[in-house]
Length: 315
Image 1: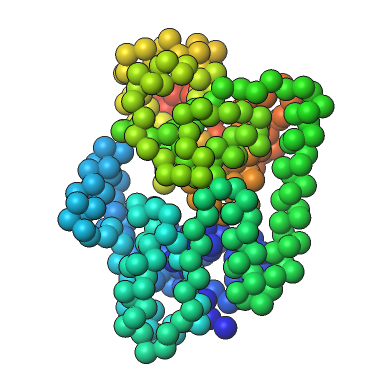
Image 2: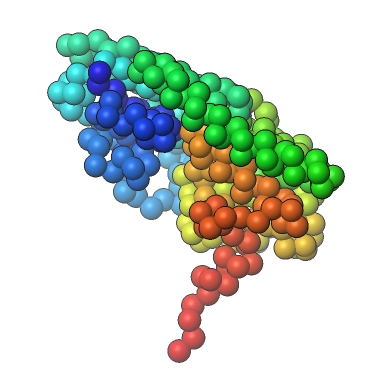
């Protein structure tokens, strides 16, 4: 059986479950494990270092013109002749959608089965792992994999209860300019880590959120994780936030509870990375209860530490 993944999250789960022997093609932005796999899906932003503002403008213009940011290498896809193609229909910016995939697949001599993975909440992402494994005839592998992840989230919940941890008032930003709140499964991650984001949109799309609304909400903890950006990339654009009127008055800023985090723990919906995101959030929200293991600690940083690490060295 030959599988092609048009979705980085699906690729990640395939590797996490040890099912990569079935994988014959991926997208240009699939995780490092798949670096040697043929790249079937490409993007007009690939290899470019656009700012948040530029990316937003490019997407807005592309959407207004009815164009896609992504394209499929038709010849490569034809040569692979996949039996199954995993795709999505959640975000036109993050990944190629099912409509574009269907257009490419229609040209193939051999018609594969399209398996869309479009989770809305955290439980849906758990079920996506089962959908992937079941399509490959390996459902039991997914069940064992998920059982291990469930133990990790159960541990966090048990510790929060044991320590009577207070619910923290959170905001997680999915984009900096313009500012987007968080949506879909991320509010559920926040809840699982002992917080609540009243500006979020659970099980729905993230939306542009006015700065004055954020000031009124005044989060205790602010997590900044723009989609597609690691913490180093985000640090270079933090001036877009810190220059705003009232930044220094935010409770999160005054108490040094502003964090910059890698996007893949939140906006890449592979269940393993999302569980890692819950563990990271728990450490941010309740540092007196949870201490990050080295692998998790590398994925986020205090804003002040991030800025200090990027100061030029004096000669």
